[in-house]
Image 1 (cartoon, rainbow, N blue to C red):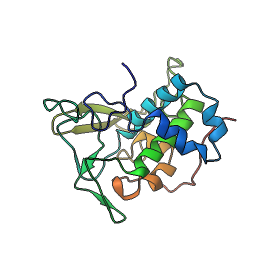
Image 2: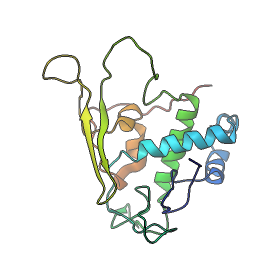
Image 3: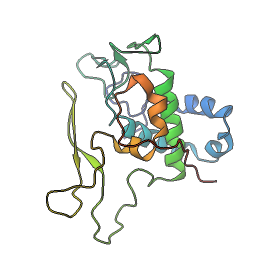
Image 4: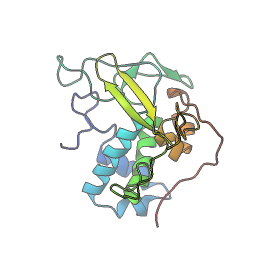
Length: 198
């Protein structure tokens, strides 16, 4: 699968393209950290960040059909219509800056630590993972269901608030960035932290 940031595209896997991310970080304190990654690593991180942001429930309705094939739906949740935030109206012609910027910052965190959301793959040890996971996805009329990993005790789970997407639980500062574009609840308040490896 190739990197695809086509706005409203049927095969898009990123909200932002590489030039947008470069421009975003150019005047940020993280410019040197982002520049240190290869273009391939940046694209992988952007795709993973977009995939994680796709687990969030957003206001409004996904635009359809896709911009590149009238017979196919757009692949991603954005662009959307029927939503507004802080006086701005969502449009099928653009993705809000807050969504794009959130993807860039999340990509930086994932480029620095690929296991930041999912944890190490194939770690063994027999421990059951805590939290939630996407248990069902559907493209037509967009349906997404989340389930909690069992905690090992009969009839219980370790999920504090199962309605909170894992990406928000791991990176609570995203809640502020996504603000009124998304319907996000969190089980507890936490400080805003940006996880980057120097």
